[in-house]
Amino acid sequence: MTPHNAIHQRTRRLLNAFDINHSSVFWVVFVSTLPTVILLFISYFQAIALAKADLDNIIKIATSETNQLLEDAEVTLRRSNLDLQTADNQTAVNLLRRKIYNDFRFREAGIINKQGFITVSSLGLLDKPIPESQTMAQFDPKNPELQILGPGKTRLMQEKSIVFILQGSGRIGGTYLLVDPAILTYFLKVIPSQDLGEHGFISLVTTDQRLLSSMGTAPDDLSFDLQNSSLDTIRSSKNTINRNIKIVGGISRSWALRYWLQNLLVSAPLTIFISGILSYLFVRQLRRVNGLDYELKRGLAENEFEVHYQPIVDLKTRQCIGSEALLRWRHPQRGLIYPGLFIPIAEQTGLIIPMTEWLLEQVIQDQILLSKRISNFYTSVNLSPTQLNTGDVERLIQIMRAKSQDSRAMITFEITENKLIEEQVQVVQDAIARLKQLGSRFAIDDFGTGYSNIAYLQKLDLDQLKLDQLFVKGIEHGSTVIQIVDSLIDFGNRLGLTLIAEGIETEAQYQYLKDRGVRYGQGWLFSRPLPLGDFEQFLQSSET
Ligand code: C2E
Ligand code: CA
Ligand code: CA
Image (cartoon, rainbow, N blue to C red):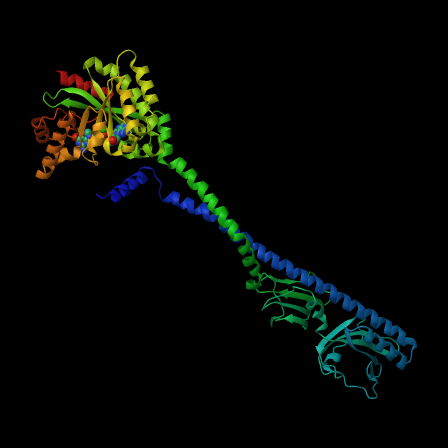
């Protein structure tokens, strides 16, 4: 297996063991996209609301301008009617002329007498009655209100006009004003920033659905079914103006959504930032709660760890002479977890230090019991190389002094060769020396698996060498492995170290190692690692 594969597999095992699974991924995605989705929604509705407000505003202005125009027209016509009661035709025409000159909104004015002759401001009295146009025919002489006719041709002008007409009295049939339809929306063009977009419009429509004037592209159907409009951006004046004019405005939805885009451009960077912060915080929290390091800390505080002991036997007699203490984690939900899963994390997070201290306390306490059965009973404790590299063994020394009282602590510290830092040789040497002063011994663990710098190892005051189970397994398989085993044994002997073979599972392995003069061994052939109670029983049964 390549190192990469090994890491990959370990990660997968961790993920499986700790549910950092699809639902967590879902929540991370959910939390990080939530602000964006909310922003999209809020700014969408805001854009529509802004468009409506704009349109309402335009309609309001149009309404007040139109009202003003109608009011002015009515006042002018009523006054003319009054004046005409006393003045002759010429004076009346002069009056009208003045009005037209003074107010650009009115294009032409006229008087209709009882005979149907009309007088106009620009031409004076016309001799013959001018046949009424279609537009003028709509005039109802019995209606006392201001009437709005058109738009249409009046025979007086080429262009279509809207006619404001008011019934007269006495010899006067009525007076009227002609208005260019464009005047009705003229004032909208001078309001700045009232851009309605490609499909936008403002229309003045009579209640009998005549289009008086329009700006932009008014729809063909003037019924304006506002309730069922697909455009919620069509608005209309609240009330009809002056009895029979309604103002309707509309813009296209896509036009309204330009606000949306503008909004998004401004707020997107902020939302992305917020999303980033949120997902960071969320993942951190998730890691904390779901993460193995958090779990480990909790497990340690809740006393979920156990020490199992694997017997170490004298290969000549098969008698147990010591044991190796191995950590187990009895997780409340996940059952028994083996150290291969949590030791690497504990080493990464530094949790290995309190963990080892806890283990050592436990071991020393248990040893008071075990040493009653077997004299000179040593227990092996795996020491994380990081602890030795920093030389920080103060707490270990304290524990060994306090717990072992007057008797000496019979501890063998196992260290893996390939993780010791060669530059730190002085620090490591000192740490080893201080722990050995208290009666402990030192072993090189997993010997043969790392790059062994023999010169470096020789500088350390070691007692034992543990032959890795990889080589023990290979004994039955091939000559090359056997050659390596032989040379490792040879090497240990030359350094004067006591050899311990790990992972002995078969009689054949046992026989070979015994014959080669390996002193001690451990493995499933003798016993698996056992909880204290079972281990005591094991010792008892092997005595008999
Ligand atoms: P290790 O120090 O090499 O421990 C020997 C491992 O081999 C143990 O695995 C043990 O259960 C297993 N073993 C023993 N006999 C046999 C056998 O006949 N066949 C097979 N296949 N395996 C056998 P375990 O308990 O899972 O521990 C794994 C590793 O975790 C240990 O390897 C050690 O490096 C580390 N570890 C365990 N406890 C501690 C601890 O308290 N502190 C530190 N720093 N590391 C620990
Ligand atoms: Ca070990
Ligand atoms: Ca080992």
